[in-house]
Image 1 (cartoon, rainbow, N blue to C red):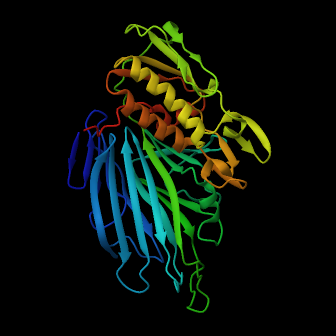
Image 2: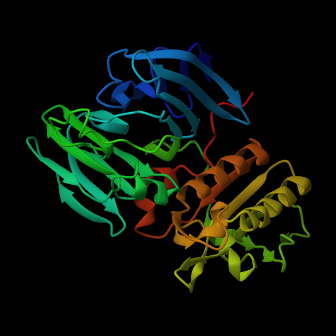
Image 3: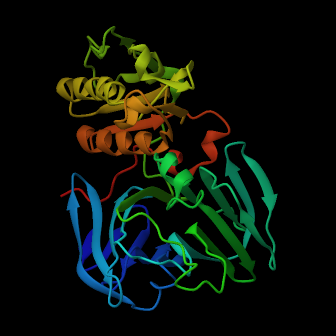
Length: 390
């Protein structure tokens, strides 16, 4: 894998991404030599697409097997509002963190966008989560998603899928900049589609007296996008799996025979955790465990570390427990005692990337995903090579 200037390339999975040193976000993503996405933009008060930022910092590096792009920008005139953005690439997923620094006296007369982009090709359908409802797309379509979905799955005519997700912090997207929830506008043409994600879109013709004035503070928004990718992993026959016993009270799993020929299985849904680790809806506890809960993630990590301590190579099948859940228990996102809506697809992806790095190249990992979650490229790529190991 290469890391040249502001380009990151995953040779095994056949993609490369370029970042503009004068902007934020990826300027171009190619998969198998085909342009898939460009024009990634963060826009404040209508500015941000045409070199209107003063760039303070922009670089790429690797850490723990992940390729990372960081940029810090400010508007070059007027109130010096700033952006900070980090893009973390592993396998076929990019996790994005965007910070908007809103200064006192900011007046918004034009839209504010976070993670808008252009998708190239002929896109024929859109599937949204929750619900997994699908609608046909055709040139000339233009519509608004007034409530930002957790997932948008765009399918190209050749079956390729591009996934755009809200991050774990759904409460932030619900709040936006304080003027209502974030939403998206989608416009389809013969050669692609434009996905615009708005934090706020003021009515046209506002003056200084009628402009929107957001609270002066830092606003953070997390998101991710993923795309179809070929698998580089050896296929494992689940019929030969030896299921490991899950030990109580976060003690990991029982594995007494470190035979290199054994095909091991772990069901993460069986990890015993406190009731507070489960997903909640109001005061009602759900069956699922929440991957944004630190205690639950530590229990799962302990099981992976046990495998590494026993052997540097092996075959592992994840039998269950890697299905996203929606939760509102504030303790999971460092807001104890509050009802804070969030969801844990991001937590599942980050765990997979951590585990892939921890296990090393000697372990082959396969995940059993139930329908309809197996449609998501971000879950299809779990435990693939992150791509930026030293």
